[in-house]
Length: 263
Image 1 (cartoon, one colour):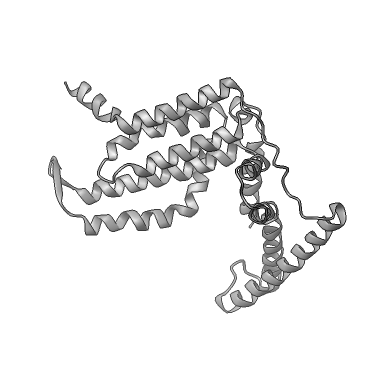
Image 2 (tube, rainbow, N blue to C red; image 1 turned 120 degrees about the horizontal axis):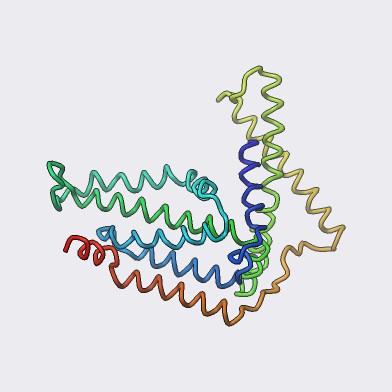
């Protein structure tokens, strides 16, 4: 629990950076992310080589924003079991031979496995990178400016802001369990009671938070909808980045480079 709290706080600390990437217009950052995700997802499973150049954008942004690589990969770990489950199935269902690498036979399932794995890593890393270079209030402002319903914005905001409260309640209960039982792991026969008590404590804490917010400002306002206007320079940079991604989708740069090297 303490590690989860530290990881959660670490993301917020990274978003408070002062680099040019952090100061870049949040709406354009989200637009670049959406275009990037759509392009990466649209690449066929059999076209693994076309994915390779798309590693460049997250790597450059991570370096320019001073975001450590391990912080980005930490966001991939929770999704890794599902990614592997979806990718490994191709090894069993797709067995058509494509070519031989020495004595090793490469099938279309292996190519699909690598493609799905790299696609998932790129998309999850890109979303983690957006959270690491953009303050959460700015993301909410962008969502509010494009017409996202207020009730959904409030739900997202409160869930994000008070997730740390949930972790703290769980950590306190875990420490109490350790002191009473003498061991760290929660046994299966106590798991139901533990989860039920955690749910009740979370409801009580959420109710107190709601009352405090109503007493303070009379409502549940969580975002301002004030969106920073993009400068001409930021728009030009965004168009160049988007155009570069479209170019990489249309032209297989990796294949051209490979043919040039072997020529």
